Image (cartoon, rainbow, N blue to C red; front, side):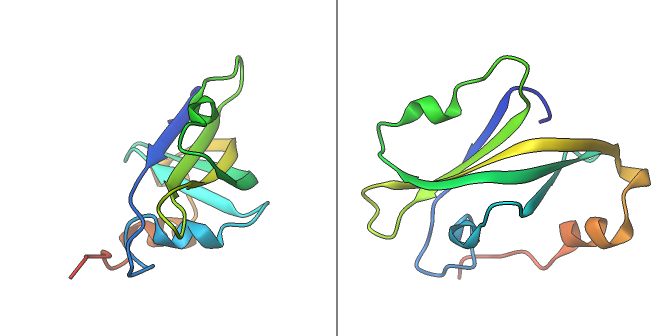
Length: 112
């Protein structure tokens, strides 16, 4: 996290609230927060798009650029939906606003 192109992929289920289902609603300029329990990494979405399963170049590192790429299945399962975001800042966990920290303690989305 916070270096290169940190890429995560996950399934999209029929229940759109589990795993990566919610990222289909991602929009440009939305924030994304990740934590490694030492730091919180804040990213801002700069692109969302539908891509082919063969478009693996989207996870390539770009020199001197810290970014995040999230990928999940599209509605058909034959393509992919991608979110790309740039790192805005990296903050020690104990310095992060409580509103942001509370988002990490949401009820788990379990597939039942």
